[in-house]
Length: 427
Image (cartoon, rainbow, N blue to C red; front, side):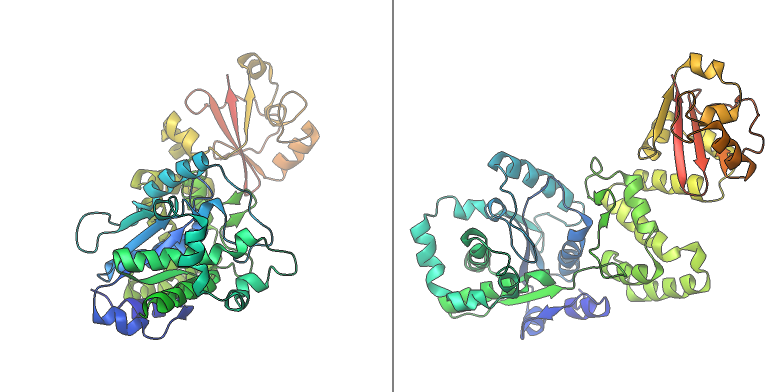
Protein backbone atom coordinates (compact mmCIF):
# COMPACT_ATOMS: atom_id res chain seq x y z
CA UNK A 1 0.00 0.00 0.00
CA UNK A 2 1.38 3.38 -1.04
CA UNK A 3 0.33 6.88 0.01
CA UNK A 4 -1.33 7.77 -3.29
CA UNK A 5 -1.24 11.57 -2.98
CA UNK A 6 2.33 11.64 -1.59
CA UNK A 7 3.41 9.43 -4.50
CA UNK A 8 1.73 11.77 -7.00
CA UNK A 9 3.23 14.87 -5.41
CA UNK A 10 6.86 13.81 -5.75
CA UNK A 11 6.09 12.77 -9.31
CA UNK A 12 4.71 16.31 -9.94
CA UNK A 13 1.38 14.76 -10.94
CA UNK A 14 -0.97 16.89 -8.83
CA UNK A 15 -2.45 19.98 -10.47
CA UNK A 16 -5.67 20.56 -8.51
CA UNK A 17 -7.14 18.62 -5.61
CA UNK A 18 -10.35 19.19 -3.68
CA UNK A 19 -10.03 19.74 0.07
CA UNK A 20 -10.58 16.51 1.98
CA UNK A 21 -9.44 14.21 -0.83
CA UNK A 22 -6.25 13.17 0.93
CA UNK A 23 -8.11 12.50 4.18
CA UNK A 24 -10.65 10.34 2.33
CA UNK A 25 -7.97 8.23 0.65
CA UNK A 26 -6.09 7.67 3.90
CA UNK A 27 -9.31 6.77 5.70
CA UNK A 28 -10.38 3.86 3.47
CA UNK A 29 -9.92 2.06 0.18
CA UNK A 30 -11.83 4.24 -2.27
CA UNK A 31 -13.31 3.79 -5.74
CA UNK A 32 -12.22 6.49 -8.17
CA UNK A 33 -12.74 6.91 -11.90
CA UNK A 34 -11.38 8.41 -15.08
CA UNK A 35 -13.41 8.76 -18.27
CA UNK A 36 -12.24 8.36 -21.87
CA UNK A 37 -14.44 9.28 -24.82
CA UNK A 38 -13.94 6.80 -27.70
CA UNK A 39 -13.38 9.40 -30.40
CA UNK A 40 -10.73 7.22 -32.12
CA UNK A 41 -9.98 3.46 -32.25
CA UNK A 42 -6.95 4.03 -30.05
CA UNK A 43 -5.88 6.08 -27.08
CA UNK A 44 -2.72 8.13 -27.63
CA UNK A 45 0.15 9.10 -25.38
CA UNK A 46 -1.68 12.28 -24.45
CA UNK A 47 -4.02 9.97 -22.50
CA UNK A 48 -1.17 8.24 -20.69
CA UNK A 49 -0.99 10.62 -17.72
CA UNK A 50 -4.62 9.86 -16.84
CA UNK A 51 -4.01 6.13 -17.31
CA UNK A 52 -1.02 6.33 -14.98
CA UNK A 53 -3.22 8.08 -12.38
CA UNK A 54 -5.41 4.97 -12.41
CA UNK A 55 -2.38 2.67 -12.27
CA UNK A 56 -0.88 4.40 -9.22
CA UNK A 57 -4.37 4.55 -7.67
CA UNK A 58 -4.73 0.78 -7.99
CA UNK A 59 -1.21 0.12 -6.70
CA UNK A 60 -2.10 2.20 -3.62
CA UNK A 61 -4.89 -0.28 -2.80
CA UNK A 62 -7.81 1.68 -4.24
CA UNK A 63 -10.34 0.58 -6.86
CA UNK A 64 -10.01 2.13 -10.35
CA UNK A 65 -13.15 2.55 -12.44
CA UNK A 66 -12.82 3.34 -16.15
CA UNK A 67 -15.76 4.89 -17.97
CA UNK A 68 -15.62 4.62 -21.75
CA UNK A 69 -18.01 7.31 -22.94
CA UNK A 70 -20.33 5.66 -25.39
CA UNK A 71 -22.84 8.45 -24.66
CA UNK A 72 -20.57 11.46 -24.10
CA UNK A 73 -18.51 10.41 -27.13
CA UNK A 74 -21.56 11.14 -29.28
CA UNK A 75 -21.21 14.82 -28.36
CA UNK A 76 -17.55 15.55 -27.65
CA UNK A 77 -16.02 17.46 -24.77
CA UNK A 78 -15.50 21.18 -25.59
CA UNK A 79 -12.79 21.60 -22.93
CA UNK A 80 -9.90 23.55 -24.46
CA UNK A 81 -11.01 22.72 -28.01
CA UNK A 82 -11.04 25.60 -30.50
CA UNK A 83 -13.89 24.12 -32.55
CA UNK A 84 -16.72 21.63 -32.19
CA UNK A 85 -15.96 17.98 -32.82
CA UNK A 86 -17.51 16.12 -35.74
CA UNK A 87 -20.12 13.55 -34.68
CA UNK A 88 -19.22 9.88 -34.94
CA UNK A 89 -21.63 7.13 -35.90
CA UNK A 90 -22.73 4.77 -33.14
CA UNK A 91 -21.02 1.84 -34.91
CA UNK A 92 -17.71 3.73 -34.93
CA UNK A 93 -18.03 4.54 -31.24
CA UNK A 94 -18.77 0.90 -30.39
CA UNK A 95 -15.73 -0.31 -32.35
CA UNK A 96 -13.52 2.31 -30.69
CA UNK A 97 -14.76 1.23 -27.24
CA UNK A 98 -13.69 -2.37 -27.87
CA UNK A 99 -10.22 -1.28 -29.03
CA UNK A 100 -9.67 1.08 -26.10
CA UNK A 101 -10.80 -1.57 -23.60
CA UNK A 102 -8.09 -3.93 -24.84
CA UNK A 103 -5.43 -1.22 -24.53
CA UNK A 104 -6.38 -0.42 -20.94
CA UNK A 105 -5.94 -4.06 -19.97
CA UNK A 106 -2.19 -3.67 -20.58
CA UNK A 107 -2.05 -1.17 -17.71
CA UNK A 108 -4.72 -2.15 -15.19
CA UNK A 109 -5.63 -5.36 -13.39
CA UNK A 110 -9.27 -6.16 -14.21
CA UNK A 111 -9.45 -9.28 -12.02
CA UNK A 112 -12.18 -9.89 -9.46
CA UNK A 113 -10.02 -8.95 -6.47
CA UNK A 114 -11.16 -6.21 -4.10
CA UNK A 115 -9.34 -3.43 -5.94
CA UNK A 116 -9.65 -4.93 -9.44
CA UNK A 117 -10.44 -2.35 -12.11
CA UNK A 118 -13.98 -2.04 -13.48
CA UNK A 119 -14.84 -0.96 -17.02
CA UNK A 120 -18.19 0.76 -17.60
CA UNK A 121 -19.93 2.47 -20.52
CA UNK A 122 -22.04 5.55 -19.77
CA UNK A 123 -24.36 4.70 -22.65
CA UNK A 124 -25.75 1.98 -20.36
CA UNK A 125 -27.35 4.56 -18.05
CA UNK A 126 -28.11 7.23 -20.63
CA UNK A 127 -29.66 5.17 -23.44
CA UNK A 128 -33.08 4.79 -21.75
CA UNK A 129 -33.17 8.24 -20.17
CA UNK A 130 -35.50 10.73 -21.84
CA UNK A 131 -34.66 14.40 -22.32
CA UNK A 132 -37.24 15.59 -19.79
CA UNK A 133 -35.98 13.12 -17.20
CA UNK A 134 -32.41 14.31 -17.76
CA UNK A 135 -33.44 17.94 -17.25
CA UNK A 136 -35.23 17.04 -14.02
CA UNK A 137 -32.40 14.81 -12.77
CA UNK A 138 -29.53 17.15 -13.68
CA UNK A 139 -30.37 20.52 -15.25
CA UNK A 140 -32.60 21.49 -12.33
CA UNK A 141 -29.66 21.37 -9.92
CA UNK A 142 -26.89 23.21 -11.79
CA UNK A 143 -27.41 26.98 -12.39
CA UNK A 144 -26.48 28.41 -15.80
CA UNK A 145 -24.24 31.05 -14.22
CA UNK A 146 -22.31 28.24 -12.49
CA UNK A 147 -21.77 26.53 -15.85
CA UNK A 148 -20.85 29.80 -17.61
CA UNK A 149 -18.13 30.48 -15.04
CA UNK A 150 -16.16 27.38 -16.10
CA UNK A 151 -12.97 28.20 -18.02
CA UNK A 152 -13.74 25.45 -20.55
CA UNK A 153 -16.93 27.36 -21.48
CA UNK A 154 -15.58 30.91 -21.22
CA UNK A 155 -12.74 30.30 -23.64
CA UNK A 156 -15.24 29.18 -26.31
CA UNK A 157 -17.75 32.03 -25.95
CA UNK A 158 -16.03 34.27 -28.48
CA UNK A 159 -15.71 31.60 -31.17
CA UNK A 160 -19.06 30.03 -30.34
CA UNK A 161 -20.27 26.98 -28.46
CA UNK A 162 -23.38 24.96 -29.24
CA UNK A 163 -25.92 24.03 -26.60
CA UNK A 164 -24.90 20.41 -27.19
CA UNK A 165 -21.31 21.05 -26.12
CA UNK A 166 -22.40 23.49 -23.42
CA UNK A 167 -24.43 20.66 -21.87
CA UNK A 168 -21.46 18.26 -21.91
CA UNK A 169 -20.50 19.15 -18.34
CA UNK A 170 -24.01 18.15 -17.24
CA UNK A 171 -23.59 14.74 -18.85
CA UNK A 172 -20.21 14.23 -17.19
CA UNK A 173 -21.53 15.45 -13.85
CA UNK A 174 -24.40 12.95 -14.08
CA UNK A 175 -21.82 10.23 -14.78
CA UNK A 176 -20.19 11.04 -11.45
CA UNK A 177 -23.56 11.17 -9.66
CA UNK A 178 -24.58 7.80 -11.17
CA UNK A 179 -21.26 6.18 -10.23
CA UNK A 180 -21.49 7.65 -6.73
CA UNK A 181 -24.97 6.27 -6.12
CA UNK A 182 -24.60 2.92 -7.92
CA UNK A 183 -20.90 2.01 -7.50
CA UNK A 184 -19.86 4.03 -4.43
CA UNK A 185 -17.35 6.01 -6.52
CA UNK A 186 -16.20 8.98 -4.43
CA UNK A 187 -13.36 10.39 -6.55
CA UNK A 188 -13.08 11.54 -10.15
CA UNK A 189 -9.67 12.14 -11.74
CA UNK A 190 -8.49 13.60 -15.02
CA UNK A 191 -6.24 16.06 -16.78
CA UNK A 192 -6.01 19.70 -15.76
CA UNK A 193 -8.38 20.70 -18.57
CA UNK A 194 -11.12 18.61 -16.89
CA UNK A 195 -11.23 20.49 -13.58
CA UNK A 196 -14.42 22.39 -14.46
CA UNK A 197 -16.26 19.21 -15.45
CA UNK A 198 -15.05 17.36 -12.36
CA UNK A 199 -16.15 20.04 -9.92
CA UNK A 200 -19.57 20.26 -11.57
CA UNK A 201 -19.92 16.57 -10.77
CA UNK A 202 -19.05 17.06 -7.11
CA UNK A 203 -21.53 19.97 -6.98
CA UNK A 204 -24.33 17.83 -8.46
CA UNK A 205 -23.67 15.11 -5.88
CA UNK A 206 -23.71 17.68 -3.07
CA UNK A 207 -26.97 19.25 -4.24
CA UNK A 208 -28.80 15.96 -4.87
CA UNK A 209 -27.54 13.87 -1.95
CA UNK A 210 -26.02 16.28 0.55
CA UNK A 211 -22.83 14.19 0.45
CA UNK A 212 -19.24 15.10 -0.38
CA UNK A 213 -17.39 13.76 -3.40
CA UNK A 214 -13.84 14.54 -4.47
CA UNK A 215 -11.82 15.53 -7.54
CA UNK A 216 -8.16 15.49 -8.54
CA UNK A 217 -6.43 16.58 -11.73
CA UNK A 218 -2.94 16.03 -13.07
CA UNK A 219 -0.99 18.63 -15.09
CA UNK A 220 -1.26 18.45 -18.87
CA UNK A 221 2.03 17.19 -20.27
CA UNK A 222 3.67 19.64 -22.64
CA UNK A 223 6.94 19.72 -24.53
CA UNK A 224 9.87 21.82 -23.37
CA UNK A 225 8.71 24.65 -25.67
CA UNK A 226 5.20 24.56 -24.16
CA UNK A 227 3.53 22.95 -27.18
CA UNK A 228 1.17 19.98 -26.98
CA UNK A 229 2.85 16.72 -26.00
CA UNK A 230 2.36 13.54 -28.03
CA UNK A 231 2.18 15.11 -31.48
CA UNK A 232 4.71 14.47 -34.23
CA UNK A 233 4.87 15.57 -37.85
CA UNK A 234 2.87 12.43 -38.62
CA UNK A 235 0.20 13.24 -36.00
CA UNK A 236 -0.62 11.55 -32.69
CA UNK A 237 1.55 8.82 -31.20
CA UNK A 238 -1.04 6.09 -30.69
CA UNK A 239 -1.11 3.10 -28.35
CA UNK A 240 -2.29 0.84 -31.19
CA UNK A 241 0.67 -0.79 -33.01
CA UNK A 242 -1.21 -0.67 -36.33
CA UNK A 243 -1.47 3.14 -36.01
CA UNK A 244 2.01 3.82 -34.56
CA UNK A 245 4.56 1.04 -35.05
CA UNK A 246 6.52 -0.21 -32.02
CA UNK A 247 9.71 1.20 -33.56
CA UNK A 248 8.19 4.66 -34.09
CA UNK A 249 6.73 4.50 -30.56
CA UNK A 250 10.10 3.54 -29.05
CA UNK A 251 11.92 6.17 -31.09
CA UNK A 252 9.52 8.91 -29.94
CA UNK A 253 10.61 8.47 -26.32
CA UNK A 254 14.25 8.10 -27.31
CA UNK A 255 14.13 11.48 -29.06
CA UNK A 256 12.79 13.40 -26.04
CA UNK A 257 15.01 16.19 -24.77
CA UNK A 258 16.83 15.79 -21.45
CA UNK A 259 14.52 18.38 -19.87
CA UNK A 260 11.43 16.50 -21.04
CA UNK A 261 12.85 13.13 -19.99
CA UNK A 262 13.43 14.29 -16.39
CA UNK A 263 9.72 15.08 -16.18
CA UNK A 264 8.39 12.14 -18.18
CA UNK A 265 10.28 9.43 -16.28
CA UNK A 266 8.33 10.41 -13.15
CA UNK A 267 4.94 10.52 -14.87
CA UNK A 268 5.09 7.58 -17.25
CA UNK A 269 7.15 4.92 -15.47
CA UNK A 270 6.54 2.92 -12.31
CA UNK A 271 10.12 3.32 -11.13
CA UNK A 272 10.29 4.41 -7.50
CA UNK A 273 11.93 7.57 -6.20
CA UNK A 274 15.27 5.93 -5.38
CA UNK A 275 15.55 4.34 -8.84
CA UNK A 276 14.70 7.61 -10.58
CA UNK A 277 17.20 9.59 -8.49
CA UNK A 278 19.85 7.04 -9.49
CA UNK A 279 18.88 7.48 -13.14
CA UNK A 280 19.20 11.26 -12.79
CA UNK A 281 22.75 10.87 -11.44
CA UNK A 282 23.76 8.37 -14.13
CA UNK A 283 22.27 10.52 -16.88
CA UNK A 284 23.95 13.66 -15.53
CA UNK A 285 27.34 11.95 -15.65
CA UNK A 286 26.93 10.85 -19.29
CA UNK A 287 23.99 12.61 -20.99
CA UNK A 288 25.04 11.37 -24.44
CA UNK A 289 24.12 7.82 -23.40
CA UNK A 290 20.47 8.93 -22.93
CA UNK A 291 19.80 6.54 -20.06
CA UNK A 292 16.69 8.47 -19.00
CA UNK A 293 15.16 8.30 -22.47
CA UNK A 294 16.04 4.62 -22.79
CA UNK A 295 14.44 3.80 -19.42
CA UNK A 296 11.17 5.47 -20.45
CA UNK A 297 11.23 3.92 -23.92
CA UNK A 298 11.89 0.44 -22.55
CA UNK A 299 9.15 0.43 -19.91
CA UNK A 300 6.46 1.95 -22.11
CA UNK A 301 7.24 -0.04 -25.26
CA UNK A 302 7.06 -3.28 -23.26
CA UNK A 303 3.83 -2.24 -21.54
CA UNK A 304 2.06 -0.88 -24.63
CA UNK A 305 3.38 -3.40 -27.15
CA UNK A 306 5.42 -6.36 -25.85
CA UNK A 307 8.86 -7.49 -24.74
CA UNK A 308 9.58 -8.77 -28.24
CA UNK A 309 8.49 -5.50 -29.84
CA UNK A 310 10.78 -3.61 -27.48
CA UNK A 311 13.76 -5.83 -28.34
CA UNK A 312 13.14 -5.34 -32.06
CA UNK A 313 12.80 -1.58 -31.67
CA UNK A 314 15.93 -1.32 -29.52
CA UNK A 315 17.85 -3.48 -31.99
CA UNK A 316 16.72 -1.28 -34.87
CA UNK A 317 17.78 1.87 -33.01
CA UNK A 318 21.20 0.35 -32.33
CA UNK A 319 21.62 -0.66 -35.96
CA UNK A 320 20.43 2.70 -37.26
CA UNK A 321 22.02 5.07 -34.75
CA UNK A 322 24.37 3.08 -32.54
CA UNK A 323 27.62 1.21 -32.97
CA UNK A 324 26.29 -2.14 -34.13
CA UNK A 325 28.76 -4.20 -36.12
CA UNK A 326 28.32 -4.43 -39.88
CA UNK A 327 27.35 -8.07 -39.70
CA UNK A 328 24.52 -7.39 -37.19
CA UNK A 329 22.20 -6.15 -39.87
CA UNK A 330 22.62 -9.41 -41.79
CA UNK A 331 21.37 -11.40 -38.79
CA UNK A 332 17.87 -9.91 -39.00
CA UNK A 333 15.12 -12.12 -40.36
CA UNK A 334 13.05 -10.73 -43.22
CA UNK A 335 10.05 -10.29 -40.90
CA UNK A 336 12.13 -8.41 -38.33
CA UNK A 337 13.77 -6.32 -41.04
CA UNK A 338 10.42 -5.21 -42.45
CA UNK A 339 9.00 -4.60 -38.98
CA UNK A 340 11.98 -2.56 -37.86
CA UNK A 341 12.14 -0.49 -41.02
CA UNK A 342 8.40 -0.19 -41.55
CA UNK A 343 8.60 3.63 -41.56
CA UNK A 344 11.65 3.87 -43.80
CA UNK A 345 10.94 4.91 -47.43
CA UNK A 346 11.17 1.96 -49.80
CA UNK A 347 12.36 1.99 -53.41
CA UNK A 348 11.60 -1.06 -55.53
CA UNK A 349 13.65 -2.06 -58.58
CA UNK A 350 13.47 -5.11 -60.77
CA UNK A 351 16.21 -7.71 -61.11
CA UNK A 352 16.79 -6.52 -64.66
CA UNK A 353 17.33 -2.93 -63.45
CA UNK A 354 19.70 -4.25 -60.78
CA UNK A 355 21.76 -6.13 -63.34
CA UNK A 356 21.95 -3.07 -65.63
CA UNK A 357 23.39 -0.77 -62.94
CA UNK A 358 26.87 0.54 -63.77
CA UNK A 359 28.02 1.81 -60.37
CA UNK A 360 26.82 2.73 -56.89
CA UNK A 361 26.04 6.33 -57.92
CA UNK A 362 23.68 4.90 -60.53
CA UNK A 363 22.00 2.81 -57.81
CA UNK A 364 21.11 5.74 -55.59
CA UNK A 365 20.33 8.42 -58.19
CA UNK A 366 17.02 9.19 -59.86
CA UNK A 367 18.37 8.97 -63.39
CA UNK A 368 17.14 5.38 -63.55
CA UNK A 369 14.69 4.56 -60.79
CA UNK A 370 15.32 6.07 -57.38
CA UNK A 371 14.32 9.02 -55.26
CA UNK A 372 17.37 9.26 -53.00
CA UNK A 373 19.39 11.70 -55.14
CA UNK A 374 18.13 13.79 -58.03
CA UNK A 375 21.24 13.15 -60.16
CA UNK A 376 24.34 11.01 -60.33
CA UNK A 377 26.42 14.15 -59.79
CA UNK A 378 24.65 14.82 -56.48
CA UNK A 379 25.16 11.19 -55.49
CA UNK A 380 28.87 11.33 -56.29
CA UNK A 381 29.34 14.50 -54.22
CA UNK A 382 27.62 12.89 -51.22
CA UNK A 383 29.82 9.77 -51.53
CA UNK A 384 33.00 11.81 -51.88
CA UNK A 385 32.00 13.76 -48.76
CA UNK A 386 31.63 10.52 -46.79
CA UNK A 387 27.89 10.85 -46.41
CA UNK A 388 26.62 7.55 -47.85
CA UNK A 389 26.57 4.03 -46.41
CA UNK A 390 24.96 0.85 -47.71
CA UNK A 391 24.22 -1.96 -45.28
CA UNK A 392 26.20 -0.01 -42.64
CA UNK A 393 29.32 0.08 -44.85
CA UNK A 394 30.70 3.52 -45.75
CA UNK A 395 30.91 4.03 -49.53
CA UNK A 396 34.07 5.87 -50.61
CA UNK A 397 34.11 5.30 -54.40
CA UNK A 398 31.12 6.51 -56.47
CA UNK A 399 32.27 4.25 -59.30
CA UNK A 400 32.22 1.12 -57.12
CA UNK A 401 30.27 -1.77 -58.64
CA UNK A 402 26.94 -2.37 -56.81
CA UNK A 403 27.80 -5.96 -55.98
CA UNK A 404 26.70 -5.75 -52.34
CA UNK A 405 25.50 -8.76 -50.42
CA UNK A 406 21.78 -8.08 -50.19
CA UNK A 407 19.94 -8.56 -46.91
CA UNK A 408 17.80 -11.67 -47.20
CA UNK A 409 18.94 -11.74 -50.86
CA UNK A 410 16.63 -8.80 -51.61
CA UNK A 411 17.18 -5.65 -49.54
CA UNK A 412 19.76 -2.87 -49.31
CA UNK A 413 19.69 -0.36 -46.44
CA UNK A 414 20.91 3.02 -47.67
CA UNK A 415 21.95 5.72 -45.18
CA UNK A 416 22.24 9.31 -46.38
CA UNK A 417 23.94 11.55 -43.83
CA UNK A 418 23.18 10.82 -40.18
CA UNK A 419 19.40 10.51 -40.13
CA UNK A 420 17.97 9.63 -43.54
CA UNK A 421 17.43 5.97 -44.43
CA UNK A 422 15.99 4.16 -47.45
CA UNK A 423 15.30 0.51 -48.14
CA UNK A 424 15.95 -0.63 -51.70
CA UNK A 425 14.00 -3.76 -52.58
CA UNK A 426 15.20 -5.86 -55.53
CA UNK A 427 12.24 -7.78 -56.93
